[in-house]
Image (tube, rainbow, N blue to C red; front, side, top):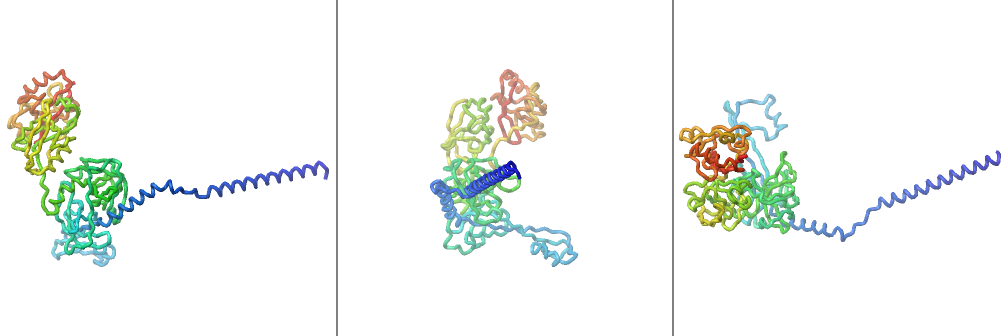
Length: 503
């Protein structure tokens, strides 16, 4: 081998050695970095201390309230009859699959009666040492048997003591011997809760007893949810699922500030929106319901509607707050107090009225016979009247909502109208004695956009009574150059104000 060949061989060997050396160095370095990356980062106790503190607070509140929460089991026997038949393979064959849920024949006539038990489950909370338990009305409605299970698994039969379907509240009571060691909840001040406050919900979602979830108050004063006649819900994002109904919503002092009653979900599962009946509403009813008596609500005797921006401008109001009176029932508390159609009620018994719901709830909570001061704005001036509140016989009164279709106005406004006569009133099914009946409305017209429709009876236009078609035309003719005109309309036994744009 030549010298040059030897030199080349030595060079290649040195190159390979250098490459292997660098590779080994890189592998060692990589291994070193990998080892370092796999080492857990240290936890600074000072950083996690606030989270631990909050966790201990939740633990303490849960431990305080959970013993007071019960599971409510209900059973209803559904009965039906159908033609007599026999199973082709005998009852025993089908009982292998259906067990005791197999319909049991009650007679041997041609028509057999069958009984099928329907079971439900909810939650509740112990109120006192006498064994009274607060829950939802819908949890125990139309049931034949009720059982409650305490946190320590003891089970007792219970019976309904008092209910108020209009708020979905019920009181049940343990039957027979009452345990001496019953714990009880403390009802807090729901009015003190603010959006963002921490809360915990306790109950039996999906039958999982003594389940605790946490969240915040998402909103207060929620109404028009469609669950009960009287609604003033606390909204929360604490998880509430089927079975939580009747369970408590508690603040961080362990006080019950609401009773969980519903979730907003199309599939019956929690989607971040739950509702609770505020504790202050419940507290006003408890003395009556525990005695087994019926809740009696106050009644003012008016039909009211929301004050929109347009209505506020028509009545000279600085802002769209309060409730507008569109009808005063004869002989009612409002009638005797001198309240008139067109009054805007802005204050009731020392409370500033926010809207229709607020006034309705204030009146309902007033004991019949109580005299209250009511402030109204009439013709731009504030007046105060005294009203002796009556007893509510029916449901809460509110004005019919303006319809978005089929409205009516004369001529260019898209209305066909006729002076109201007794025969026409009977034909239309309206109770008004005087006014102008709308007989047709042009689709897409100004009248239609205002919410008028066939069958409405216009009794006032621009604050003036109109008893004939001619009077209505005259009043609207004078107002044709204005931006809008105010109408008072009778509809389906109620009254409401409608603002109709003239241009």
